Image (cartoon, rainbow, N blue to C red; front, side, top):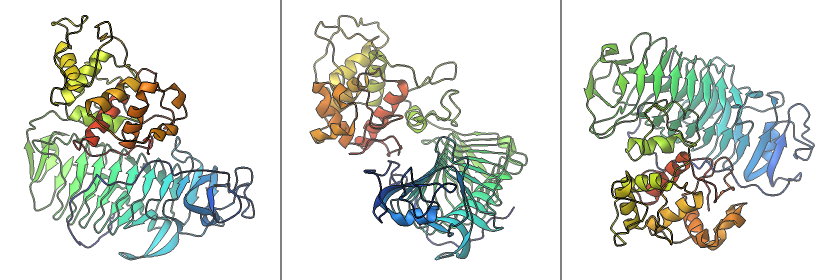
Length: 522
C-alpha cells in the first residue's frame, strides 16, 4: 500500500472547540422552479431536470439540483446511481446540505464518478466531490473508481461529513488538505486503495466514531496535520493509522485491532498524543498482526491510559501511569455502542462524575431518580452555598445520598416538596432537570419566544418557560430523535442527564463543546 508523500508547512495546535454545526439547515416552503429553492429533490431514475424539483416532480441529477438550491438549502436524494449526466467533481456549495439515507449510511444512494480538480496544494487530482465551507453530506455512498481517485476533497474548508459510506475509491475516501477543518463522523470506510482518510499540509478538524475496515490504512496523516481522532474503530485493514513528517494527531478512545499489518505506524518526526498522567487517552491497540505500535520516529512517544501490550510494541514508547481513571474504548460499556449520547457519556465518565454498573453496562435508557441526580450534581459542581442546611423528613442521615442531597440543595440545584419531603426514589422529569441546572448555575437570558422551537411547548409548565428559554439560548438542550420535541414531562434517562450536565459544564467554560445533530439552536 502507498500513502501520499507531502511537504511540511506550519505546526499549529489542534483545536476541537470550533467545529462546524451539525444542526440541520433551515427549511421552509415547497420549492418552485427558480434559483431560490430552499429544498429540492432528486431521483436519477424517474427525475427530469425540466421538472420542479419537488418530491412529486424531482430533478434527475445532483449537479443540476445544486444549481437550483439557495445558500442554506437542502438537496434530498432518492435511491439510485448518481453517475450519468453528472459533471464531476460535483461541488457542494457553502451551507448547502445533501442528504440521502442516514440510517443506512447511504446504501443504494451511490455517487460514482471522477473529474479533474486543480488543487491549490497538490496540483491536478481525480475527485468525485468537493465540499465548500459549512456544506454538509449525509447518508450517501461515494465511489471514485479511478486508480488515484479520491471520494471527497476538502481544501481549507470546514464541511460536515456524517453517516456516509466510502468504498471502492482508488486512493482514499476523503483527502483533507490546506487548512481544512472538517467534522468527519459516523462514516464507514471500506475497500479503498491507499486509505480511508488522508490528511496533508496543515489540516485539523475532528474524526469521530467512524469505522475503517479492509481499506488500506484506515487513516494516513502527513505534514503538520493535527486532527482529533476519537471513538473510531479500525479492523481488518492493512494498517490502522499511518503517521509521517510532523503529524501530531490527538488519539482518544479508538479501537485499533486485528489489522493485517501494524496498528499504529509512526515515521519521521510524527508525534501522536497518546495521553499523559493527567489525561488518559483510552485507546485500545491490540491483536494486530505485526506490531500494535511501531515507532520509527526520532522522538520518544508517551502513552498513558491505553490498553497496549508493551511486548507488542517496537521502538521507543514511554508508558506512564495515570493519576486519574481513564475511559478505555467506546466498548467499555457493553450497551452504548452506536448510542446517540456516547461522547457525552464518556466525557462525564472520564471526569469521574458518573459511572456504569458492575455488569459492564451503562444502561443509558434507565430512568434517573431524584437521589441519583443529586449525587451526580454534588459530584460535578462545587459552588458557594446559597441556602442554609435543609433537612428533609424522608432523608435520614444514614441514607446513601444524604450528603449529596444536602450539598445539591444548598447550592440551589434542588428543592423539596411543601410537605418537607425530598422523595429521592421518585423519577426526575426532563423539565425538572432543566430548571434545576438553570437555577443552580444562576443562568439568565433567553427570549421567551424561544420555546416556539418546541412543537410540544403546550406541555411545558408555566413555571418552567423562562428556564427552558434560558437553557435553549445557552445551547444546553439536546432532544433525540426529534430536536423540536422536548417531552418536558417525561422521566429523564441517564443518557439525557449526562448530556444536560455536560452541556452545563460547557456553559460554565469547564468543558469543550461536543456537537450533536440533535442540538436545539436558538
